[in-house]
Length: 103
Length: 219
Image (cartoon, rainbow over the protein chains, first blue to last red):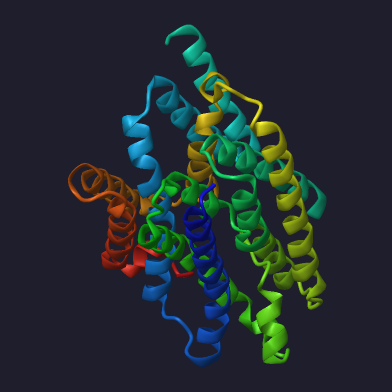
């Protein structure tokens, strides 16, 4: 691997570390000064789930049938059974079977 | 209570390791992330952005948007950590993550005041995550056609599960739909990587504009 690429990765990961720990600490620091109001809480809460939706929507729309079936199945299992591992396992199985038989 | 959670976490770490190898990350890159970032959703989301040259700004913005959640979580723990000196307060939250937070807060509401639950749970999950990543990295490289086994959908299913598997509320349907649509349009028509930020902001703003009473007394 080239040296510039290594530094780029190190920089990227460091950024993630700083943000990840920073957000954990920031909550404490803010609370020790001003308690967050309900509107701000709602905004932050909705933003952190919406960001995940924003990441996965193009994957589903531009994915093949296997990806779409996996998304539907995994979502249904997650809602119905509340079991994260089962959800991922069913999703993988659906994608694999779709590609085995239909693709 | 802790043991099944740790076992789950090993499996998630394994999934992360395998996906990281398939996405072309070097072993040390994936390991560094698991060791120090220790946050499954942002690590999985980062894999999606991991192209050369690395879109650092998009990476930072995505991580930030995902992690604002942890800000709320540590804020909720503040009453518990309040008696400690500041330095200890700050070190208690290093290993804070979704599942040990939920567990620790549950214990706190049941009257537990021993902070060992929080720290011990964090250490157990962190070890499980790192071990899982190592195993995934070790075996993930041997798989040549990841699509055949559905390995390429692990990330998608994981993120989807985080969103809908937690505690989905009907009131979030509108913001989430808006987030999905705006992200998709941004994905098509705006410069690369902006769609994540656009979706996050849309979801957040729409939620803020909805009447507060729709969210019940707890918000």
